[in-house]
Image (cartoon, rainbow over all chains, first blue to last red; front, side, top):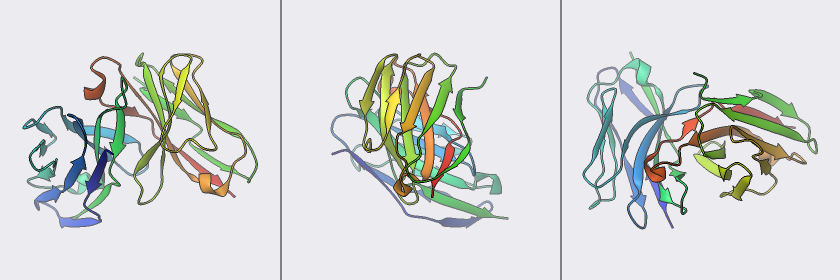
Length: 114
Length: 115
């Protein structure tokens, strides 16, 4: 079945360091891929998305490229800030008929230290 | 612009009690979802709805019931609460147009403890 695998956290970085959070997926067909972010005490917010192979999603300095050949959608940011500390979820959709039901990874906690 | 609103935000129940969690969205979305979030397990889909008057089971539906009598509201019920249902519950909604490409919009969650 469809699934999403994320690197386990926590990931602890110093401010201005480079960030990579790995995400790989297993899916039939051509899912859309998403990264969501969850700040403490809040719900999930869409960070970026990509809907087909080789698409690059980007937002707030974060980027991720839909790689069909490696079934990956790794999240990157060149210089993290303390305010980026949050839990990041990779997700895929496009299964389940007419709905856009999402399958989430387990989440990766990012802690950025000043 | 409220988006998705969940009530209550916190609740403590005793085993065997019942309660209803309310989700309201003001974006005219057709699809609505209930998830639970547990440590180390990400979000798991409990039930979902593709329109007013329709509901369907998700990944972990046992012990929960839902209703969608109005398009903007999606209710999650626990008939007889159990400690295993201690969790953070999130409601989400999304548009039907271009469904698989549309992001889901989440509420801030309900933190539920069952003693």
